[in-house]
Length: 462
Ligand code: NAI
Image (tube, rainbow, N blue to C red; front, top):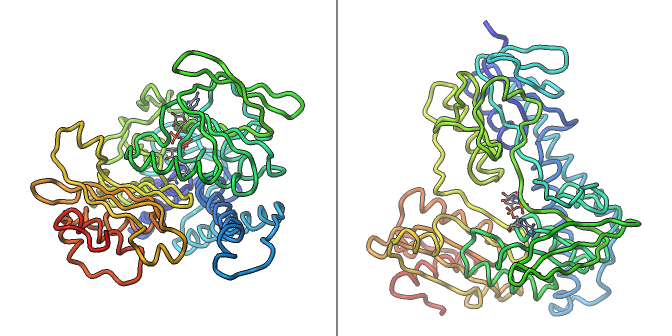
């Protein structure tokens, strides 16, 4: 009998959630983690620390822009960068220790070190080999590289380095107008950096509803971010800690350069499976390095499973968490399921942007007839009271059945508001179901209801 029912490799949101769920289902569980702390990229160098810096810099922005308007007089606070980083580190510590506590509570063994899989049923960490009936790979992802750009995590950084810069850069160039680039670009703009985002496409946030993407770009521009679109970065040269970024216009092939103190490379992430020994095992991967799995997260090798950023689908912590829970249920002999059609995406800038389900573009592409219910936060009393009237809620519903197909929000609390729509979509609700549900006044949520009303007879405050 192997010592463990399950060994999970990686303790990010996919791995640790899977471990806890396995233990709750009565499986003897271990989790291998090479970092000194649990929680993976998300808790240590991703979602959580970036939210701390987004919050702190937003507070500064509020003090500078809005305090006086509310009769709060006095000098805006100045930034103590070291103290802000210490606050961020404290937030990380609280969360990683929280996972450690949950592991102890659920009697999950944390095996510290790098794991490899010498053969199915065996996980090698250092000199020790641990046996398990099932192995789950939850090793996540790493920043994608770009030809001509050498990351040193000092002058040219990935999101990891961007969270612990020695000082706030005067000039920051961000390569890639995706979620990482825009969140970190927002942080440093508010902290006083001159931020330019260079993007390959002719719009920001690829895959997002085009109308939201446009309004989002306009809003960020108003906040001070500069955009160079339709331009491919060719390389970065670093001399005396100063960087020169060269990019080529995709319209006319002309080349230009921008100088920067810091360059953030944010052109996507790739699955991270280094050192596991997948090739020797014969585990099938795609040409982009993703582990291939079936609908129950099994690889082609019996007893080896994979979840999270290492497999296909959006590289999002909550997608990995859902797979982790469902994976545990499958391993416990139950039926685990993830509804990939209802996975929200949130950009934690101010205003926040949140999306779920179909966009107008995907609906047009599939030829499905739909209706649009839109409501501006300008018509929402609560939003106006807190200087958050910019933005809107847009609900897309089936033209014949009124079933909610998607929702796109740019505005205050968007990342929380979207979940009302997620639940509605899970229950197959119609826009009218949302419109007929009482929403407390005055809340931002009323804007969601108004958008649902706009799918039918019309919104009240529009
Ligand atoms: P991304 O894939 O979202 O965006 C990368 C951008 O870089 C694209 O717009 C692409 O067109 C552009 N690009 C690629 N090559 C370029 C070049 N040579 N020159 C100029 N632009 C170029 O990737 P990102 O922002 O690095 O994020 C990685 C992953 O992490 C994503 O899957 C994202 O969803 C996830 N993430 C999610 C967060 C959230 O949910 N709030 C926060 C941070 C990351």
